[in-house]
Image 1 (cartoon, one colour):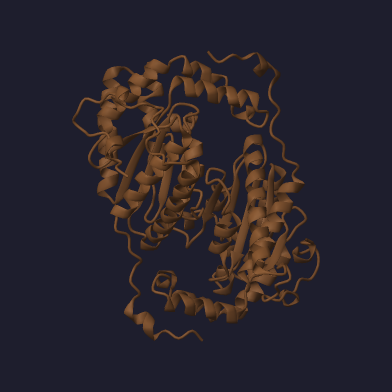
Image 2 (cartoon, rainbow over the protein chains, first blue to last red):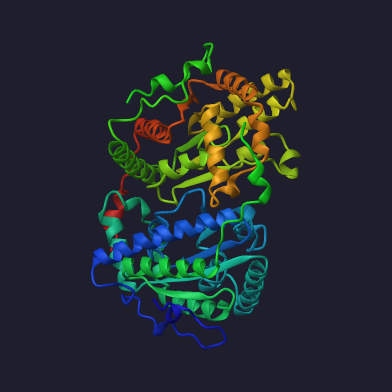
Length: 269
Length: 269
């Protein structure tokens, strides 16, 4: 599958309007076909993650951003359903604590980046510090621009020290969010996921789209590119992210470490 | 299944000899039947973990201890194969860092205990500080006894503050370890798992069994009981731990939080 069209090129004007949230073109001819491909890709991602862990040298970071109900949790569940819990780690960034706020905004994020052999998923990330804080005008435009540069620098350092970074924006429509919020309210077992505060953020939808557009344009780089994932269809979303992650791992040319020659002489007593 | 016979009662003399590592009595009539049961229990563990997370009040801690190759990693992979990566977290304790050594031995462990709604698996744990360090006589018997008490106190505090603790010792035989080490050496894709230092610990096998026996006897309590898991058969091991964890979660009587009455009046614009 050609994932290039979902990858945002640096140094160009970027418009979210070029991407339709209800695009389903990653999907195949039938639901069965899609699920079989997801299953197959999940198995392959697990296999490659095992080699990444065995190699214990390079690191992989998947950053997932998106509005409420855009499917961040669902992505983790479905793309990594075949993965060994030992091999992956999810770092979820919620509203910062007092201690976190007393540090720079990259502090809590830096402490969670992958170590050698790890695949880490950021469920939200340092991008909240140029999104929600900008939409609510807790920082001004000048500070926001400074942060774009700081984020580019931070990510370049991670890449230069052995991390492969993949960033995905889960792009849903206002209508899809409405349907998903209503679903949470109507299902007694999902009501706990509903947070009345989400409605306040929903009311700022257009401002968020502007903030996302700007942040993506400013922080998509050759070394740490953004991808826009049409996510009204959960299957389309899962297929695309699986494909992007799989191609990323394949491009790393992962190999099990060779067996040291001296191991040939070992006899277990 | 009756798991009582694998649970070590407090206040009694405990002998590891009562447990045969090659016991397979948790297994059913066929491999197919066993795999189907594992699959079924995995699905149910995942369902209950979702409610634990939704409830976001209580915590679950599974401590896994065992000799090299006893199957700690394999247990995580197979018992939690159906689990959402968002819902569980694995904390692996390796040789302590200089910073960790500069603190008391419970310090790094305490920082990794589950928070509200979390299910955390300790892959090795604070028990290493009464096992490897005692076998190598880095601490004397008096200090070791002091630590048993400290560990009982620490775990009781965790239980009193909302944590359910399950501790499992993966009991393998010297022969099973030999076969597994040889397998690592002969398979090029597994050779990276082989650590020549494991042979030094293997040479101390009997001392380790004494240290485990003593530690289990001293730290099995009503609130945080030890289980001895015959683990020469991987399937027997996976079935038993799944069953113990499942029964533990079932006994917690987990419930999705009720939908607040005021949610009934919400209309999504």
